[in-house]
Length: 529
Ligand SMILES: CC(=O)N[C@H]1[C@@H](OP(=O)(O)OP(=O)(O)OC[C@H]2O[C@@H](n3ccc(=O)[nH]c3=O)[C@H](O)[C@@H]2O)O[C@H](CO)[C@@H](O)[C@@H]1O[C@H](C)C(=O)N[C@@H](C)C(=O)N[C@H](CCC(=O)O)C(=O)O
Image 1: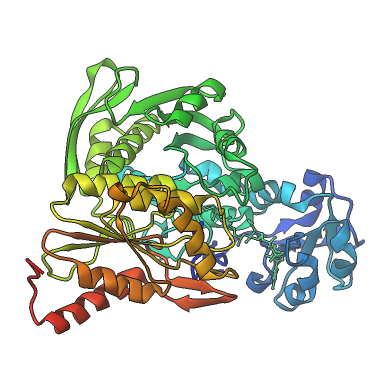
Image 2: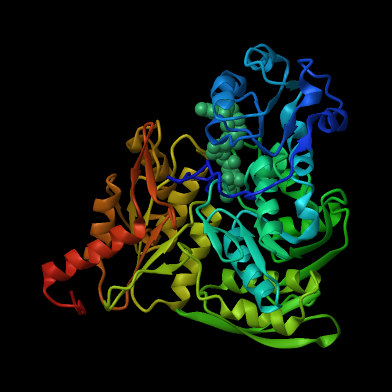
């Protein structure tokens, strides 16, 4: 996920870990983390797996009870015991509840701080046996992950993918949870990769993950930085803090080598603070970059460009993903793959073989004479980038449906309102996961940005808080050569309203709206309407 949340999110299935792992003595763990045991039984126990969620405990697990914002994990110790936990690791605040179960208990001051180390130890450090490429940045993480995985496959690797759209372990596919799983899930996943013979993996590394230590215990062969723009300022203090979290991936403790987009201002800034050797790329063909994209030609179905690297090495690249930002994503992936030891030709072939990414500029086929696209863009930079890309390849009007999430970074709302009003022809403002907030209040904050755009350069703006009705309106208004783009949810499957998650798939709702429109008009062509 999911900066804005998904239905299946947060709790990955228990099957996403090895089917058979050897028991590890708790005494070894206690000395590893310097934890005095909370009970005299601790040295006798052994653990086979690790989880931070009582609802996902498997027999023989170490249950790590973390303090949270809504509860303390130790409050769920009895559930963990009933599900077969073998031991509990917690902090001082959780000690009493954990000890009351009668299970062996280890106590440390900050269990989250040791979770990566503990999980790697429990599963026998599985990530060390896999070539791992991590990708971070505000936009492009998921697409880059898919491109990297395709390149690794083309090079003959049995490949894995960890990210917010899908999780792949060879041929096994799982629904996503968080964009970057909690450390206990992450190391379980790497252990499953080891069991399945996966040799290389691409993974998305979110700023939350870096700030919360979710990727502790993983060392990246290559770290890729795509770009940075405003997002997640409900979690990070400010943009500098957000950037600092991302920059952690480029320290010597976390990664061997870095690859960075120098068309992005924060990418350039990263060069000054990175502790590891950095390779630069520019999709705009900057002569300063080690790798450049030249002669890019873009169309609605994808694009072609030449990649030119150090010493004049060169290959022709063809991708099935539209938009200039996908030239940057493809170039970054190619460079990261080369840095990870993939031959350039294989990297280019793999990247070119990717048919598309679910929910990323995904077309909804309806056989109409306008395009209908669903895209995950839900931050100001991404909205602007999608609208500019579409402008280059659209003959008719751009009709965009857009909302902003509730209980999340409020500063994005006027910025997104401004972007859609300035760059779309018809802007239909609607709801996108209002959560506990009043949808009309969110829309009013988007309107603050809309009204900042001079009237003569402003899109025709419609407010329709009901997302399905907004989509219906957009599809109903489309004419020959127009593009309808429904932004925000992408592959996600739910609308968060209050404390409920209502099933909602933009792709399905768009498809249904197209059918309704056809039934209404009785014809496919709408030219001249
Ligand atoms: C802000 C944040 O990161 N919150 C995380 C935090 O939640 P919390 O402190 O509220 O946890 P809590 O509900 O109080 O529960 C406390 C503990 O009890 C446990 N518990 C709870 C209930 C129960 O029945 N049994 C049980 O064991 C929980 O697993 C938890 O360990 O700890 C939980 C697990 O420890 C995380 O799942 C949760 O992530 C939430 C779900 C989340 O939505 N995070 C988002 C913002 C996130 O991380 N997003 C990034 C960025 C995405 C991007 O840029 O694309 C991501 O990587 O996905």
